Image (cartoon, rainbow, N blue to C red):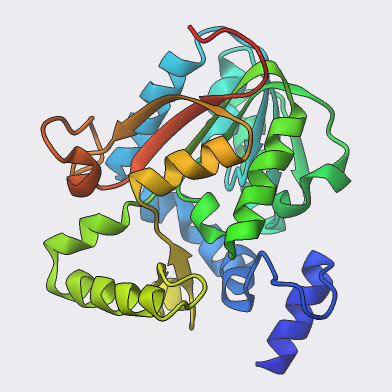
Amino acid sequence: MQEGADIDRLANGHSEGEVPAITPATWDYITSRRIAGGYDRDYCYSELFRFDTEVLDRWLPEPGRLLDLGCGTGRHVVHFAERGFDVTGVDLSEHMLAAARRKLAERGCGATLVHGDITRLAELGLGRFDCAISMFSVLGMIYGAENRLRFLRSVLECLEDGGLFAFHVHNRWYNLRYRDGRQYLWRALRDRWRGRPEAFQKDVDGYHGIRRLSLYVFSAREVRKLVAGAGFRLQEVICLNAARNAELRGVARGMRCNGFLVACRGGRGQMP
């Protein structure tokens, strides 16, 4: 465990005593050649992958400079490059980026792909963008409330005035639907009452064979607070239905939904 912590500090540039934004288990997941190799096959039937693209197309009707943070194998990089956007994708996995490069070559379109840590965005010197996205719960993979807030503030610094930032996160209260989920929530609430940091970090140990992997899951209230605390203005929150292929409507949807798609803007630009 000590060796993993040392690797994490080296990877993230953290000094002793700082909370690393990327845990050793998340590092193993992100940098795995095996997971990158099977990523598109494993998620090719995901309804969320279709729906979030439809939503992003609505939120981003006109081409501009787009920053994809945690771009993975490049599904949004390729899509928006084909739409005429000037796209820059950033990911910590060289294996994921290699897959994205192959897709771009196959589709005959271009984009800038950067191997880098999105939690240290200012150090990458990427310039400014009209819009940024961070999809498929990338935000939930960042450990520590201060690190997540710092990340959003760094995104804001990369955006032109009024630029849009869109992201996806999981909803912690969706766990009420399942026995194991209810047990997780009870433990999380107990830990929260006891003052434990990151009480809502959900254990997904064994996911894709990665030990000790976990993911932070949000409430709608927390999403709004985080966005405001980072200096963004909330534009829209879409509550996802159980299949994550449409918007959930009705009462208490913030409790019932299977995650959130969030759009927010920085600066003084007018919302559409």
